[in-house]
Image (cartoon, rainbow, N blue to C red; front, side, top):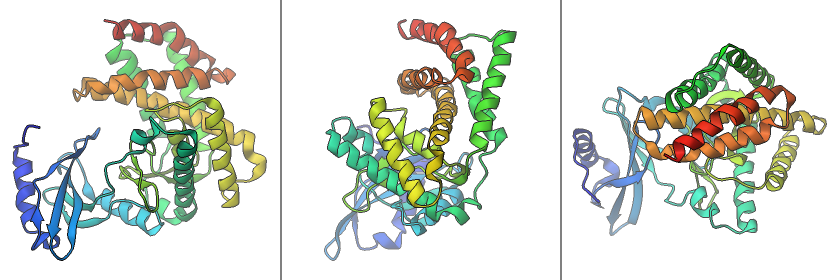
Amino acid sequence: MEPIVDERFEMMLDWLKNQPLLAGCEVSHPVPASSDASFRRYFRIFASSEENGESSYIIMDAPVEHEDCRQFIAVSAQLNKMGLQVPKVLAQNLVQGYLFLTDLGTTTYLSVLEGASEVEADRLYQDALSALVRLQKNGHSAAQQLPTYNQALLETEMNLFPDWLVGTHLDLSLDRVEKQNWQNVQQRLQKSALAQPLTYVHRDYHSRNLMVTSKDNPGVLDFQDAVQGALTYDAVSLLRDCYIKWPQEQVSEWQRSYFLQLCEAKLISKGEWHAFQKSMDLMGMQRHLKASGIFCRLAHRDGKKNYLNDIPLTLDYLVQVGSLYPEMTDLVRLLENKVLPKFAEFSNQ
């Protein structure tokens, strides 16, 4: 691996030299710990001493002109207080944009799930759903301190689909009727999302941001964009993950398990099952419209072309779920007749 040499990296090394936690330790050279869809970078170091043995830590490099570490610090403290396993902030440098964090290891849910047995996959998902219910049960007051997942934000996110996937990536435009149909779809999805109970929303709760840990599984990452929003958002992010797909029968079983845990926590009543299913389906459609646009933006604006590989699954979800609801017929028709053929054409070039 080529050594990293840049100004921010050198500044980070200078900052680490003065960390009290590392005093008297032999410290390894920082190595990249993970990739990120933002401007943040993560590095792992190992510190060893005769007294304490070897420990690993994570350094977040978050350029202050692009990122604000204060939200990460605040949400980390909130989630830790609620009993979730998240990286703890051990030291901070808000002027330069560095955080010194505990390390939750290298094993993502995705890396294990891709080869997991049914029993192992079920255990991991039950752990993740239980942690999510704990967040929603214990996070009511903390959620009120977060930004609200309101109509404007929902609309802005969905517009990533026509702007970046349809327009920028596929070089297509919508005619007058298609534009009106698109607005109708947006309004229905917004209305459904805004009608749900409000809760603490992680906002990116999926297999790349959950870590398999031997204690208090799962470890939870990438939570700094948390908001107060719709009850089903995080659950559908997990169960209709943009990076791994499960048979619908399995998804339904986990959905039912989650619903029963919500009932036990008195966050919802058992008579709401069918309405809950539909709300979760439509919430997932909003998320996948957003995700498909974000993947294109990452590819075209930020040069991260590998995210294009994740688009087919998001579009598949939209067609699969949208086909269940008459009010989504116009969106499904747009996807099947215009977007998917063009996407296939581009992908084969």
